[in-house]
Length: 301
Image (cartoon, rainbow, N blue to C red):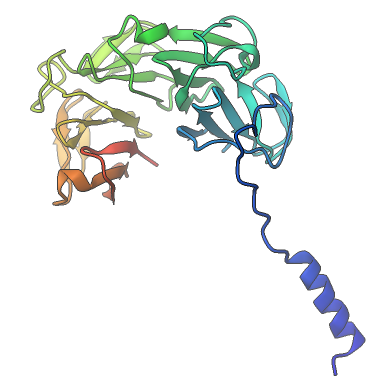
């Protein structure tokens, strides 16, 4: 027979180890109350996710026309007082009308169908929504970086940032990748000015062969990523992944000069099986399988 002390320890252990709580299945009406803190907020399948330098989680919810945040620590985030671990709306008023609200609070602005999010080291959040790119600063104010329908670009399919806060835009209809530097300097063998858009790779014509940024050709670039050294990775309809070297060096066992483009050798997987792709810079590739016709979700660590 167990002693009273053993029974007491067992009871305390059962109290500490509890079964995980399952979130309720989202209903058609759930998630429509804006701005309230909740540990059980239901949201529809996320379209895009990102982490910032503090490991806060951002989620693009295209169906509810908003961006959620899960803070790693309690405090002020984008002008809102948020509690640790709680799902909270930080941008978008839930309406699907044309984008509006620039210059004001992000949580009161219209953010139709956001699909991709990216963070910068300066605390800014970039959101791709209905072809427009919106920036939400650390104070929670929203502004447009790229206008509605991707103007002046042909159409933006993906965006990402690097460790210096530079913004990259994949333009599939323009068959190129643009860069908007946050700080002027030399990138990919080019001298670029802060805030001035520049084409990093692509000559406007669809293709799959290239040796440098000057005579490059891309076919519908649909996903991009940048590693911690500033090298750019591009997935496009040619069925492979291209790398553009930011600086001269040895990458994947091959010497590349700044601005040079190489097609990365992928395992012998049929194009229809190339689903999610994770790029580990200077090391190796992780290839997931899927049902898409070309690599998607290029994601460095």
